Length: 368
Ligand SMILES: CC(C)=CCC/C(C)=C(/C)COP(=O)(O)OP(=O)(O)O
Picture 1: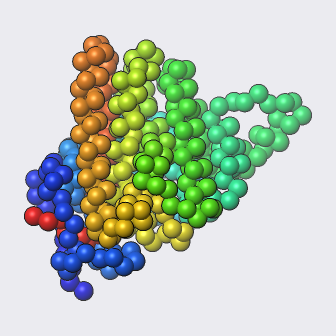
Picture 2 (picture 1 turned 180 degrees about the vertical axis):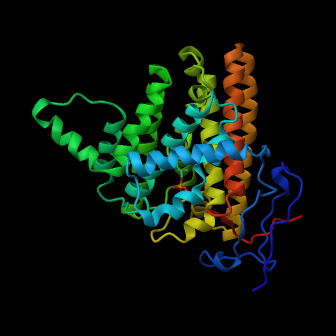
Picture 3 (picture 1 turned 120 degrees about the horizontal axis):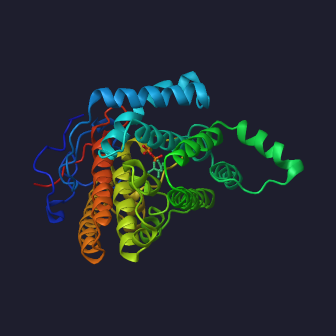
């Protein structure tokens, strides 16, 4: 098998320069088949992005040390055989890249705990570490109850507590939210809970598609990817930075538009970098390339490059809406917050593009 690569080159190419061409120069219409052409992951030149500096290794190591200590000894989150996956994720590097202006180590630690807990709920309840679309609603609702504190009717309070404590993802959610709560304002905690509810709604839509054996249409998928998205990580950029964006700025429709675009762009990055990983999952996994391929009759390569084009358009829109939001809501905190959201988007991209232990690229070649 000839091994071809996505050549490196200048970043931020216009979308018109992206045209599908397979490794052999033809387009493929067969089943997804990139497995034997996989390449080590690296930034995709045609994917619009901004490189970011590497975080301080000692800082990354300390966040990792604290997070692992918490996951293993405090919440007993995963069995020893999952340790490699946990390490390969690179939690410390992820949060240090995404929150470069964090208020301190405790802030990074809180962000890391939330990230780990969110991934545990996804992996253990929805995906391939024991998850399933069946029965997901009740598992997610129980997990969600660990984030807030619903009124507990006295004779049943203990049973609810026992059930929560018997579930590692619920223990992680509860403990991570407590740590986050300790360093931020009530209003940000509530924003985060709201965004986690959005995330859970997105998980449920995905589970329903799987049970019904339907592939969502492209607009349905793009809408859902704003719910089933990294938005809960973006929502907290002010808390992790050690400040609070006031509610009137946060809730303004211009700011909400920026959020929706940032959440979508950063989650499409995941679809694109995790494409080959998701081909290997036991159950079919929807992502933007597979949805495009299914509904628009595209080859595997054409669908992949169209997903990149869509991502790029969303990123450009995110940047222009962000500039217009800063102009419409003139306030130093608006500017600071928008800068932190953009930094999160860039750091998230860089983490995906450089996480060689977790991701690979398909061997598709963009046209010159
Ligand atoms: C908020 C948060 C960290 C959510 C995790 C779920 C999510 C929205 C993702 C985009 C992760 O997707 P996935 O589980 O497919 O990640 P990998 O592709 O396996 O890295």
